[in-house]
Image 1 (tube, rainbow, N blue to C red):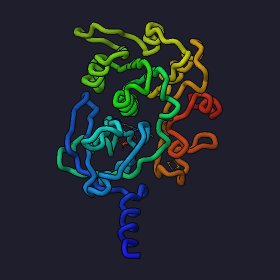
Image 2 (cartoon, helix red, strand yellow; image 1 turned 120 degrees about the vertical axis):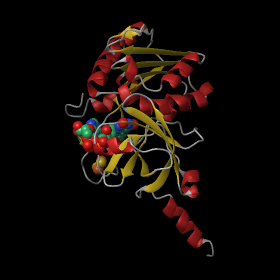
Image 3 (cartoon, rainbow, N blue to C red; image 1 turned 135 degrees about the vertical axis):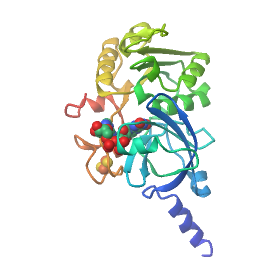
Image 4 (cartoon, rainbow, N blue to C red; image 1 turned 90 degrees about the horizontal axis):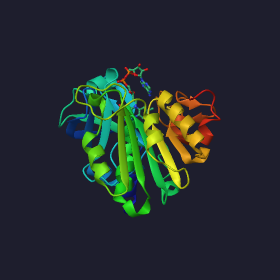
Length: 287
Ligand SMILES: Cc1cc2nc3c(=O)[nH]c(=O)nc-3n(C[C@H](O)[C@H](O)[C@H](O)COP(=O)(O)OP(=O)(O)OC[C@H]3O[C@@H](n4cnc5c(N)ncnc54)[C@H](O)[C@@H]3O)c2cc1C
Ligand code: FES
C-alpha cells in the first residue's frame, strides 16, 4: 500500500498526452534553414524512462506559437538526449530556429507507429530520402548501425535541392565508411564545386545495383519524390509490402481525436505515419 503514491507519480511522469519541458543542450546548423537540436527532459525520471521507435514523432510546443509534429532524428540508442532536425517553415519552426542552448520547449509523445523493426531485421535495407525527409530515416539508419549484425547490406540514396541543402553531411560520410554500406547523393542543381550526381533521386536507383529479393525499402520525402520512387521500385520487381514509406499530413492533436490527419479510414498520427505501399494504394489520391 505504501508505495502506491510512488506508482501514481511514475504513471504521471510517463504521461504521453502532456507536454514535458525539455532544455536545448546543443544546436547544430545543418543547412541555411535546417537545425538539429539535442534536447534533454528537465525531469530526470522522464529523461530516464522516455523510449521510442525510429519513425515516431513528438509534438513540440513553443510558447505563443502552438505545437508542431517533428520526427525524432536520433536513434533510440543515442545516449545524449533526443535529437530533432527542424526545417524553418513558418511561425513555430521560425521561432525555434532563434532558440539557443539552455532555452526550453515542451515535448509530448512519442506518437505514431514507427518503422517495423522486426520485419526489417535480417534484410538488406534500401533507404531513399529527400530533403528533411532524411530526419526519421537517420534515426533508423543509426539504430541499424548500432545492431549491425541483425541487418544485411545498407544502401542510402539521398536527394537535396542544392549541395548547400544536404543535411547530416557528417553522418552521410560516416555511414559511407561502414562495411557493406553504400551512400549515393544527388542534387537538383549543382554549383561550381559540386562534382557529384545531378538529377532526381530515381536516377540513383537505376545505378545502385539493388536486387528486390531480400531487400526492404524505406522512403521519406516530398510526396512527388515518393510517388516516382515507388513507381520505379514496382517496375524493378519490389513487392508492395516491401516498400515502406512515411506519409505527412497536417496534424493537431497527434492522438487520433481531432481528425486533421485523416486519410481514408485511418489517422496518420495513430495508424501511421509509416505505411506499406500496399496500404497507401488503398488511400484516396495520396501519391
Ligand atoms: C509526422 C510528421 C513529422 C514531421 N517531422 C518533421 C521533421 O522531422 N522536421 C521538420 O522540419 N518538419 C517535420 N514535419 C513538418 C512540420 O510539422 C511542419 O513544418 C511544421 O508543423 C510547420 O509549423 P510552423 O508553425 O513553423 O509553420 P506554419 O506557420 O504552421 O506553416 C508554414 C507552412 O508549412 C506548411 N505545413 C505545416 N505543417 C505541415 C505538414 N505537416 N506537412 C506539410 N506542410 C506543412 C503550411 O501549410 C505552411 O505552408 C513533420 C510533420 C509531420 C506530420
Ligand atoms: S492529428 Fe488529430 S487525429 Fe491525427
